[in-house]
Image (tube, rainbow, N blue to C red):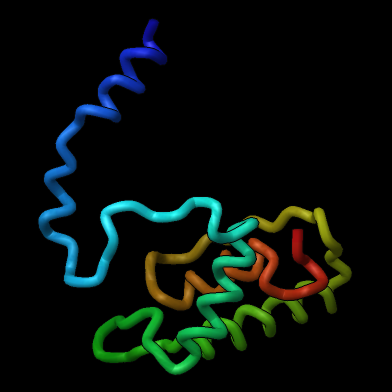
Length: 114
């Protein structure tokens, strides 16, 4: 019954936040467009290479730089002897460079891909 109530709520809930979406941002997304998060990231790295991925205190990092740094971290982890399936814990403050490591852990570096 709880699951049915949840489905009913989702179907009839007014999505007021979509009124604040910038022009060109769809209200719905095609969740089947990508086979995995890795595929989404790789597509973004290719399509938006020169676009800003992150900005902090007027310093920007492009998607291309994010891809390059992510691959460098992957190569470093491999040089330590880590292999596909090994687990790595990373503790960093909430700043753009902290985004580099998770991209790699999702498999953007080919040897670690899922």
